[in-house]
Length: 203
Image 1 (cartoon, one colour):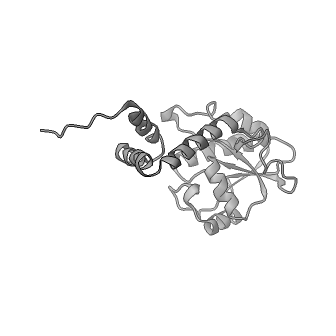
Image 2: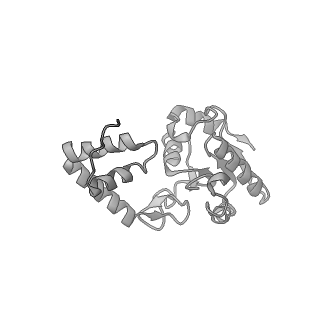
Image 3: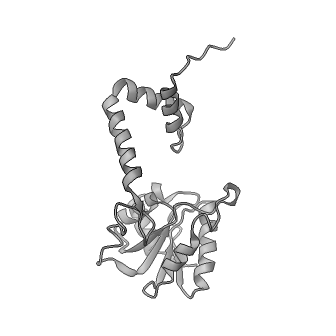
């Protein structure tokens, strides 16, 4: 006979289901997190809830780079010291942070907020490629660096974008292969990222 499962109050069940939305968090991990917060860190749970509420209410997408911002333009896009001739395309804000942490790049960014994944129903329209192409077609943009992940989806996205951008007469480069194949930029160390940027190649 199977061991009876203790009925969970609806608010607890809702919290577990919410935590399961996080990447790599399954049922057991979500339950452990929920129990920890409610048993040992109730004030932390309140802070977490308030932070999530504030983030969802106050953050928007930067008009130029599409990353998260409290203002119409994020601090990077609004920085006159950045090199406007370089535009680095990344999949996520986390990838943007990884590139920025290398201290080897002083240009601007465009954040796709995803990657092409036809099986999941994510295509050019879902990623608003028209908006990206408008941003990349500016006369001040001389080189576009494709810094999508070295996964199957990231490579497909890079290839698709390279074709579109070359048709518009833009110089398109790709990160060097110092970044391991199959890896995600978010987990690449700063020195490897700096090398991959410096040794980037034409696509």
